[in-house]
Length: 297
Image (cartoon, rainbow, N blue to C red; front, side):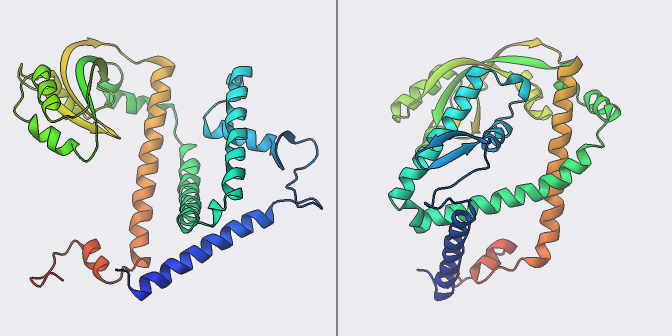
């Protein structure tokens, strides 16, 4: 049961979300008929009463990481079509008054907070990324041979399952199996949907210690790894050395250095935030990692 303080806090967040939506709607340019407008010459499509501007399309390209030299007619058609369909569905949602649902308003507020938080962190990372030079990239490549000069591709036989609530029991049922055939048999016995196929694992995508374990696997070893909404049982069947060099290596190394900058910035902001964050009630105990007392409080 929620406390009065929790309900009041939730009400304030919903009210803030309502105000945010109202502000966003009110801040859009309107013509005399209440229709959103865009500067002349920038409108490239119309979806009912809404306009699509060239700036919106450019932003979609930015989100999709599509540079100007890759925007052929087929790509533009796909991206613009998706944007138009999204606006159409938003119109339908508003007409159905879904924009007034408390859960939807909280999701809008969450999205706004996430975008602003990411923008703040990315601003500092972008400034630091300009300092990444060729020497930094070369040093990263030389210190990570399994990602570049000595990169290996492992061919694996795998069985994939959906990570549903029943997955934990299914994985437990297979813990003593010594082959993928036995895994499939156990999964069938517990009515767990599964799919068997061949795949490839790159030494550049997994921790070095785990890669060494895979290379030194015993005949009876069956590995299991969760990833997103899927879990995978697999055995290594073969391996090939496929070096990553030249411009491709430099591009990947730069991406990894940017990720390290991002992780470092997130950790720094997390530490600086501790002084301003205060948790209430039992959440204070939980966030401190303290156990419940004997009375269960």
